[in-house]
Image 1 (cartoon, rainbow, N blue to C red):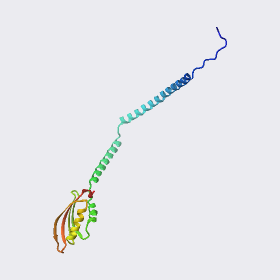
Image 2: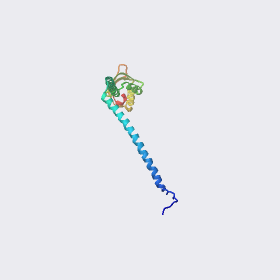
Image 3: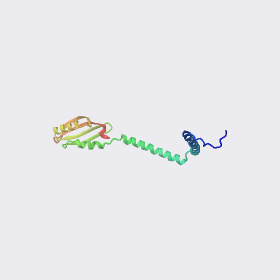
Image 4: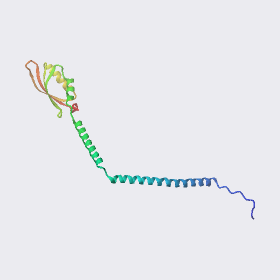
Amino acid sequence: MIEIIPKPAQKLPLWQNILFYISIAVLLAVFLSYFVLDHSLKTSSQTLENLEETLARGKTPTEIALEEETFGYQKKIKDFSRLIGSHLFASNFFTFFEKICHPKVWFSQIDLNPQQGQVALLGEAENFSVLGQQILILKTEPLIKNLDLVSLSIGKRGKVDFTLNLFLDPAIFK
């Protein structure tokens, strides 16, 4: 039997419609990604060729001279830094010693050896009591490791002449 009255077309389920549109979107994304990646590949290839060409050219004589000059300065800076780092400042001893000297003690000769941290002092004190006070001051100072009273005598004017050897902490010279 043939029906003359047409029936309305059967509607597709919602999930099939959604799947159809998602498939079209994925297809467009694939085509678009292909062209973007192709363009990126061509750009990267061109950049790589330029870099290889630059490397093949090598360094110009002025670049080589400038590089050698720079390395020369770098070596000088390293040498100077090493020298200044190992330099001992003997003047630090005098500012330190000025603070711990007894007012009634005079030093006429100082023999300073910063490398070994030794000082030989030739001096004069008012009397034995003042010399004893000076020695106590020196013994209580933490930067003085040891001290030796080498000689002791009574001078021409009745004052006490003495010689002291001090052994100092090397930190005083830095």
